[in-house]
Structure formats: C-alpha cells, structure tokens
Amino acid sequence: MPPFAAAALVFLSSAAVLVLEILAARLLAPYVGATLETYTAIIGVILAGIAVGSWLGGKAADARDPKELLGPLLITGGALAFISIPILDGLGTSLRGAGPTTTTTLTVLAFFAPAAVLSAVTPAVIKIQLASLAETGRVVGRLSALSTTGAIVGTFLTGFLLVAAFPTRPVVRVTALLLVLLGVGTSLALKRGRGLTVGSTLAVLAAAAFSFAASHPCEHESAYYCAYIVADEDRPSGRALWLDTLRHSYVDLDDPTYLEFTYTQWFGDVITAMAPDGEPLSALHIGGAGFTMPRYLRAAHPGSTSEVLEVDELLVELAEDELGLELGDDISVRIGDARSTIADGEPGEHDLVIGDAFGGVAVPWHLATVEFTELVRVRLAPDGVYVMNVIDYGPRRFLRAELATVAAVFDHVAVLGRPDSFGDATRAIGGNYVVIASDAPLPLAEIAAANARRGRSDELLSGAELDRFIGDARVLIDDRAPVDQLLTPRPVD
Picture (cartoon, rainbow, N blue to C red):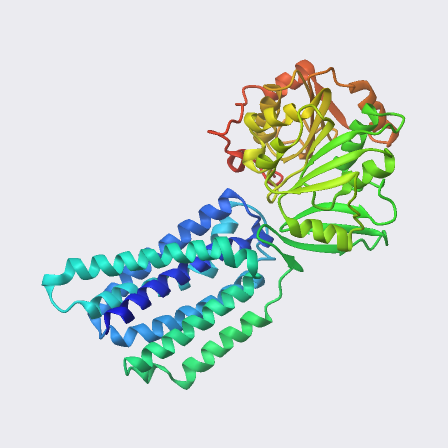
C-alpha cells in the first residue's frame, strides 16, 4: 500500500471516530440532557471502543491478510454510524432521564460498536506497512501520530464548524456515507472486492434507511439545544418551549402577564413586593429562552427595561418568530455566555437580576459560583435584588451549596419553595426553588403577601431557619463547583 494511502486511511478513520464522539453529545441531549455526566459517559465509552478496537484489530490483522479487513471495517463502521441514530431515537424515549446509568447505556448501545470497528483500521494498516522489524518503530510511530492527528482534526472540525453550521443528523449520515464509500474504494483498490456482496450492500442500505426513517423530537437544533415548541391543549394561546429534556419556558401569546410555572410566579411575587404599584424596574436576565419575564415586566410594569443575556441566538429567533417577542428599546438582547457578557454593562444599573439559565436540569456550573455571584452584585443597585431559579430534589445538596454561595456575597438571603419542601430529604417535595438575595433588607412580608394573593401558601425560608437548612454546605468557587455531582435531578423514592 502506498504510504499516502496508508496515512489517509488511519487519518480519516480516526477523524470519523471523533466526529461521532462530538456529535454524540447533541444526539443524546434530547433524552438525557447535556450535563457533565453526559460528556463523561461519551468520552469513557468512545475510549473503551478505541481500546477494544485497536486490540482486536491487531489480533485480526495477525490472524489473516490485513488487506482483506480494511474495506469491510470501513463499510461496517459506516453502517454502524447510520444505525446509531435509530438506536438513540428508538430507545431514547423509553430510557429518557438524566443519570449515569441511562446515559452510559444509551452511549454504549449507539457508539461503542462504530468506535471499536473504525479503531481496528489503524492496526490493520500498520501490519500492511511493516516490511521488516528494522522499521517497526518508524512505521508505528508515524501512523500512530497520523491517527492522533486525524482525531484532533475531527474534534476541531466538528466542534468549531460542523455543529454550528449544520444539523447533527445529516452530519452523522454524511460521515457514515463517506466511510462506506471509502471502504468500497479501498476494497477495489486492494483487489479485495469479495466482501462487496449483495448481502453487505443490502445491510448498508437497510442501515441507511433506518437512519433516515428514525423520528426525533427536534424541530430546531443549534450548537447548544434541541428545541421544540408545543401548543397547550387547555389554553389555546399557551406555548411551551422545550430545550432538550426540560420544559423550559411557557408563554401566553395573548396575555404576557400570565405565569404558568410556579417558579415564574415566585419571580412575580418578588417583583410585586419590589414595585407594588406597577412601578418600572430595570432588570438583567441571565438566560432568555422564551422571554417570559421580560414580556411580563413590559406588560405588568410599563416603562421597565430588560437586558437579556442569552447564549443561543436560535432561541431569540424562535421567541420572535413563534412566541410573540418584539425586541425594542425596553427589551434588548446580548448574545453570548453570561459569564463573559455580564461584565459589559454599567455597575449598579439594575434594580433586579433574574437568574434562569440551565443546561438540562442543572444551572451551568460557571454561573453558580461565588465569582459569578460577585459579578451579579456589581450590576445591581445598592438595594437591588437577585433572584435565581434552582432545581433540586432529595438531599438538595446543590440547593444548599448555592444558598451558601449566595450568602457569601449578599448580606440578606432567602429562598422560596413549595410547602414541605425544606424538611427531611425522604419527605421533601423538591423541584424548583427561587433564591432571593440583596445587600438591603428583603421585603419578606410583602413577598409572602403577594404569594398569598395568588392563593398559594409557599414556604419562604430566611434567617436562622435558612442557616440551619444550609448547614455545613460548602461555598461553590470556580476551582470547585461540582454542580452535576451535587444535584439530585429526580425525586428520591
């Protein structure tokens, strides 16, 4: 085999493995979310596939003519890449839910086999290129380096270009097709076309057909989210925005003052306590999604201004096109990660900061630390209020840690939760909580009164009771913020 052909095969097969690895996160996200556990499962499973494929590929290359292996390996790898899509979409709904077991299971079923098969290409090529023991080190070193280079190029190409420019599933299918064509071409070039049977052709065509026939929940896809909008059957003007596994926002197209989710009602209670007569407020929103609260402030507190920090431009477009958002002087958007864009504004310019940014069911860790909370404090007026949506269940270790973190920055802190949600972990309801913080005394009585006027009797924890609830929870800092590990994403039985 000519050296350039050998180099191309190991480069392209390794690049394909890493293309699939990066895209796996987007394919898995609608079913298990995009958390640290998701990426951990993907990296671990792909590395396991590479290890097993390299080992077994080397054994197979010693047992038979390695030239007979290359074409079938590439064709099989392409077929398995096709099949990864219907596997995820077929099993994802029944196995839906964040957690290491579910995530690892789906990743193994969808991506272990193609990673292993494609990783067997490199040892087979090395065996072909080894003319004598005298050049073993040079051949193995060169081809191993080219394999790693292919993996690097596949990583950068996918993460920086393909995910942003194209939908995920077409990229997987094109990668699979190119692998199949590369395998056919390799078999013909090496005059090992006996593997190109009618049966293998039908198997590849069946895999491609299943891939294109698979259904999935994504109406819109960006580099960050699988997004889709669902109409409310009980409220004709109601629309829910889903991001991956989470029903993230709810908007009433006809009545922007309508707040469907309990935690948004708590936001409304705090706003009412701050401005009981509908006075205008200056607000900074960390996370936009459906733009529920900016629209609420515009309608319920005329003259208010809202600056929204949103990482995903697609969500802004969806909100404008399908959720009735009209941007203007009173609602502006800054695209980018809130950790970097929050410092762009003027110190002390906002009466209110609303934190409602999520990746799956978790607050992104870099938006949950003391360092970020200090940036929030800079943007607030001296008597301004920070409210933050948090989801947690069971022992609520993340909620406790976040409360400890916010309390390390602000002088006054409280938290709103459903009745009986702050008790023993085995009996607590859990779910959404809203953390409330300020350097000025909080209007706790007014918040409770606004909550009661909604016909609710939610718990508002502060003072010594809050201190007891926080207990010995550690403050989250940039160097130590294990949000995904602290979070209990679903109720404990």
